[in-house]
Amino acid sequence: METRTIAVTGASGLIGTALCKSLRDDGCRVLELVRREVKDPEREVYWKPSAGEIDASRLEGVDGVVHLAGVNIADKRWTPEFKQKIVDSRVQGTELLAGAIAALADKPRVLVQASAIGYYGDRGDAVMTEESSAGDDFLAKTCVLWEASSKAAWEAGVRVAQLRIGVVMSPEGGALKELLPKFNLGGGATLGDGKQWMSWVALPDVVGALRFCLDNEGVHGAVNGAAPGAVTNREFTKTLAGVLSRPALLTLPKFAVRAMFGEMGDALLLSSTRVAPTRLEEAGYRFKHPELEPALRALLEK
Ligand SMILES: NC(=O)c1ccc[n+]([C@@H]2O[C@H](COP(=O)([O-])OP(=O)(O)OC[C@H]3O[C@@H](n4cnc5c(N)ncnc54)[C@H](OP(=O)(O)O)[C@@H]3O)[C@@H](O)[C@H]2O)c1
Image (cartoon, rainbow, N blue to C red; front, top):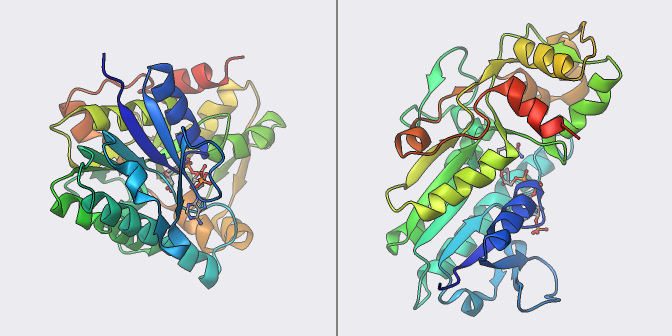
């Protein structure tokens, strides 16, 4: 059987690490794009999006590219400088990569690009499908720019899929890793009025969805990457506390969330986005973890 080669950006991150392992376990050759000196040329390719540098020749003949790179939006408080970095690290990287792919003689068949459910913004109880319009807050505008910056690749005939990823659940990183110590101490709290929808997705399903997008010729454009069982923040708090057998009786009012986290608190913790994975399910993807409680039990079992 011919070995497929998949190039991955952001390979050292939460999703990238799990994706690269899954691909290698299945016999794929994975080329990680690294923003430092290459140590292992068999496995690594140099790029530096902030300097507009990429060793594009190493991408000749790869079968697919998965683009995950971008500064972590929850890394620090959203100062004007950090917000600019959130945008630049996504738009510059995507433009550089898409331009390099478009100029290859032997192009990959597909580019799967990370995006986020932040595309939809704060939308109350309304269910967001891929047909829904973009929101108008900072994250929504960022996602619009991020998705559009792969234009050169699709104009060059490469299939491009943009996975709008929900809040990734994994004890290894991201939101759940942050929350676990607090909940384990009985300090789990409902945020604001707790009515805001939280569209989560288990890490194995993010990997599954990225690989589904790589493999399925019919999948292109925006694809919602959140589990079918979205929950409100109140339900999430109750469910996580229940799985850990701890109380979660506290409430952190909106003003306190805003005082602690600034604009990021509004965007990531108080904003309501209820997303349906319409395209993935219609194309035949079956979620391993469609509902929250069994997902958390599976993710947290030792
Ligand atoms: N985790 C979530 O809940 C979630 C939800 C929605 C969307 N997403 C999106 O999915 C993608 C991957 O998420 P993740 O959770 O794996 O993120 P992550 O753990 O923060 O990893 C992102 C990776 O991007 C690269 N990176 C960091 N700073 C960068 C910069 N300034 N410029 C270019 N690249 C930089 C790094 O990889 P290298 O050092 O290897 O280059 C880093 O490991 C991100 O774009 C994220 O916005 C994640």
